[in-house]
Amino acid sequence: MPEKNQIIKAEITGMTSEGSGVCHVEGMAVFVPDTAVGDVLNVRIVKVLKSYAYGIVDSIISPSQDRCERRCSVYKKCGGCVYRHISYEAESAIKADIIENAFKRIGGLDPVFDEFIAAEDTDRYRNKAQYPLAEINGEVVCGFYAPRSHRLVPVSDCPLQPEIFSQINETILRFINKKKIAAYSDETHTGIVRHIYIRRGYYSKEIMVCLVVRKDISRQLAPLAEIVCDTFPDVKSFVMNINPEKTNVILGKKCVTLRGDDVIRDTMCGNTVEISPLSFYQVNTHQAEKLYAKALEYAAPTLNDTVADLYCGIGTIGLSIAHSAGRIIGVEIVPEAVENAVKNARINNISNAEYYCGCAEIISDKIKDTPLAVALLDPPRKGCSEEALNAVCSLSPEKIVMLSCDPATAARDAKRLSQHGYNAERVCGADLFPGTRHVETVVLMSRKDK
Ligand code: SAH
Image (tube, rainbow, N blue to C red; front, top):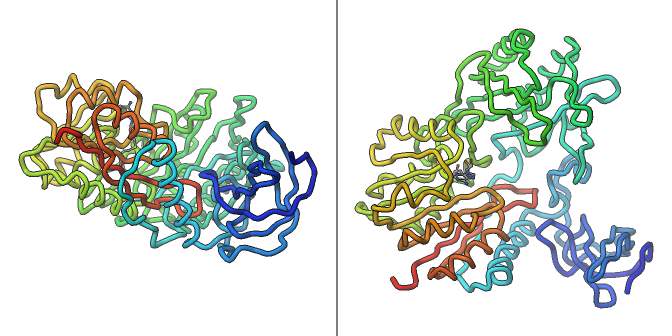
């Protein structure tokens, strides 16, 4: 067994879904961050547990061929990226492997794996950022939290975000510091400004700036709304979000528009969509369009088919297939997102889509009399609850197409569906989050008796 502080020569032979390299020392798996398959290293053991250990790089004896540097001044300090020290080709191969392994090992399934949809843009691809604020040396700064901590790492320009976000941040911070508005502290639950949250339409370039505050300071912020909108003409909406809770959930329930519109617009799969600050919207529009195209290929509805779009958000997936289906029924838990979905159907002259606000777990009550051809599921990271899967299966759709940003929960849920009479037919991964550990998956399940 390796011992703490021991330095051992080892070769990295695999990667975990968290982005750590894996090597084996005396038969024990050792996880080493910031490494690449093929690295031969001196590893310093930092923690030994029952069946595995953690190490850090002491020195590199011979580097992996995958290694290359992808520019970022705070890489390894901020908790965002885990793959900026290897090539994007290596990163996408790792992500495709993680998905295959999850479905085989966690799911015990044997689907066909379609070609992984790698990203075209590996930087500046995000359309949304949420920057926590903190006071450092008497000055309010924004940045991102260090891995697994609440310690702020100041970041002026994150290479995943549009460059204009950092210019907007600077303008906001200058105002906040001049007016001596205090940054919120989650330890003491004092101070005012909690987060800067910015979203930009990928095609429209329309920007929403949202300042998350502990209490209503609209009078104080009114001049800032003017400055930001006048300086950056693409800012079409300036919103104050009030979050009075002692919580690490970023947004509160109440939004006050201080200038411009309550929503911004973008185009997704050819449809114009309105997006409220509280609604979910995929952070990588271009890649999401490719993922949704794959979901549509898997769903392959006919013009007579009813399609349920569960966890529908602002309706993007269902609306993208409305012209190929008979009827779309969307279900979503956030009321503002449902409002957006209803309006988005109307703006695009889609009359065969209807939306319900509620949890996916009660879908069967809403549509129990409608024979369902396809159920689309796009749950949050934690996946679907057993109740939601039972509700869906009780409607016995011919196909279930499930999208997920966590291959492990996707594989778990696909396994549960396979126990309810569905076959995992095909799986496809898509990279919506280059640089980071995250990856999207879409899986096609078909009823075994069909
Ligand atoms: N399909 C949409 C949204 C996917 S994100 C898109 O691609 O844009 C997941 C969505 O599920 C979020 O909008 C979230 O608000 C919603 N949600 C979370 N739990 C839910 C539940 N139990 N029932 C219904 N919707 C839920």
